[in-house]
Length: 366
Image 1 (cartoon, rainbow, N blue to C red):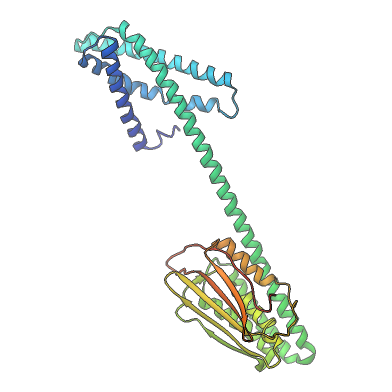
Image 2: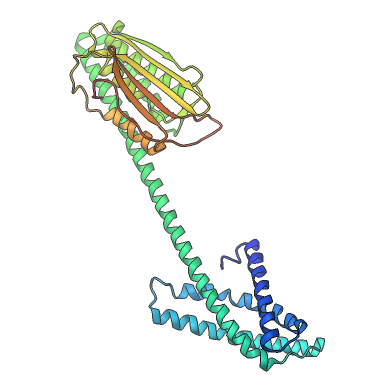
């Protein structure tokens, strides 16, 4: 369907513009064909409205000869041929309207005098209509290309997020099974207890991982399940303090904190002989959600204790989701490693978007 016919307001605006064309035609007929103002008006306005609908065909003419695939000769021949045909059709209608005016209202406009003006004016108007149609088609093509590009970006981002999320569970499993393996010979009962806890933890992580957003309270509860597993291995060396503050109902991507907490245990507390306290605190303002994870850090720990996959995953997820509107900063000071996460505050009743990241908890190594 013609785009102007798809919506009434567009058609109304189009016909209103043709009323201006009718006024111009009336002025031209009065000056060139010797008509009175009354005669020019009763001839010009109905003819302008009629030609407005004829010129709608210019859209289909432009579609039949696209600029991108048609040669110059074909474009010129198509435009000129369609213009001549349309102007001739307009003259036929003008002759009929002239007869109606003569018989019904007693108006006798000199058709021969106005025919030349109408034909030339019709050629010009139809050529202009074709040019406008090509411009509209070019805008539509550009808009479609932009839409396709945006769809490709969205699909690419979704594929990236699915890939990143798919890395999380194997990462959990690898670290946890490594811990169970270490306990098997030294503490079989602890290994069995850890296996049960791991099953509960994986069940919950898979359930949450299928969601787009989860409340921070559920993310912290999942982190506590993981820390319960690690307590079986580390015992009293691992102390935990978690405070969600006023941020429990703030939404965030699922399993976002998990790699940071793992990092704090694997490359922080586990490398400190006497252990220490892992502290997780959160706060939410109307615009920002901030989460801080702190853990003791042994300055003499191995500098290459991990692959860095977990925190790189966090960085990549936030970049894909929030672009430049989120961040992760880290630093080691006075024997403690601190990771600060900041992202837009998303309450259950709202759903915005966000950005980038930094790195983790060990030395300069995740």
